[in-house]
Amino acid sequence: MITVKHRGIGGLIETLSDGLTGAARSQRVADRFTNEIAPKLSGPQVDEKVKKAFFDSFSIREAFVACTGDFPRFGSVQEVALKTTDFTVVILGGLSALVQAAYNTTEGLIGDKLVTPYNSSLISDIFPVFDTPTGMADVAEGATYGVVDIADRYVGDTTFSKRGAAVLVTEEAVLFDQTGQLISRCNNIGKQAALDREKYIIKGIQDLSASYYCYYPAGSRAALYDTAQVKTSNALATYVDIEDAALYLSMTTAVDPVTTPDVIVDAALSPYTVLVPKALEFTALHIKNTLTVQTNPGATSGVSPVMNNPVSIEVLSSPILDVDSASTWYFAGAGGFKRQFIEKIHFPMQAVQIPPAESNAIMADTLGGVRVRYKSKVFALDNKFVVKNTA
Image 1: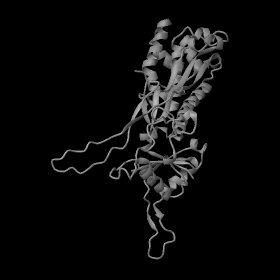
Image 2: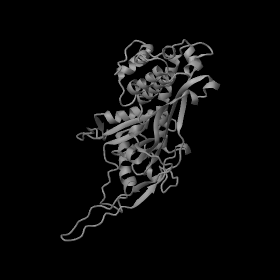
Image 3: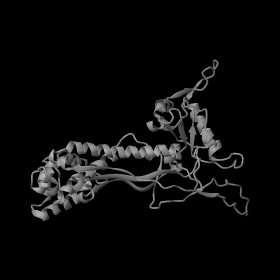
Image 4: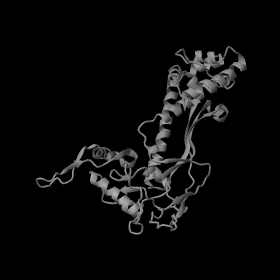
């Protein structure tokens, strides 16, 4: 078991070599780094002390010297580096871990609270959806029980592309020890991957443009928020607007109270969730955190105009919403967003090493790189759990 100390990347590579030389040394360093160090730099086995010590001592130039036994010179870096296994494994393994760590630690994102993950290897899926069943009924002694009738239907999806970018390690990165630049690029692309996925989740929930359309009932595209799913003239200002959204969801979207008056539907039960643009974030937080509210500011003497705040909500906000509207907000009952939206995942975010042979090494003077990619998209299973509110 290796303990990484602040002794430089060269010292770590020497320890991993177990005193071997030549090709055996190169393979031993590569194997031990892959099995003992790399898992501690990112992922479920991450060790923050090991990660900090590794990147505090990380140097591309020093790693080159330790792995090849040669000093980098113009015209020879690529040739020498490509003859070893350990240099590319250590450098690319470290950079891959850095990208993954930046992705995992990006703060302020709300996408995972709004969608349910759905892993799939199929290009096209069919998702079964069930309408509200008939309600409970009286059963006389000796009589048969009524059969619950559930109308089934389905929604489909559509094809979508993967998203990605690459960071390459160039010959100059070794010659001029551009470690800081590479670390900065990897941190940035990891964060950008997280923000890109967040954008696609929020845009999918909005269902405003073709690139993000998410609703395909019976396999055909339809607007997610039609007349029944939009509460107009309901700008968010007081708790009354949240109350109006809850009533609208309960009476209009979730179930028809005339045809099925005995059915209790949980779509509009608390705790509630409101998704708001940044322009409304503090308004929503004010509504949530106010201890008391005035129910009738003009009340006559003897009638209390004050009551305890009845609102129990989770406030989620995103500046992505402001791009399209600074006043439109979304309301859901308990678990409503996750019940309505799934994220179909072909593969989650990956930081994949690009071997020198695949990085156009000879033509571009590169020593390999890191490919950052993910393939997922938001789809709606139904349209009865979330209400869109406009001013």
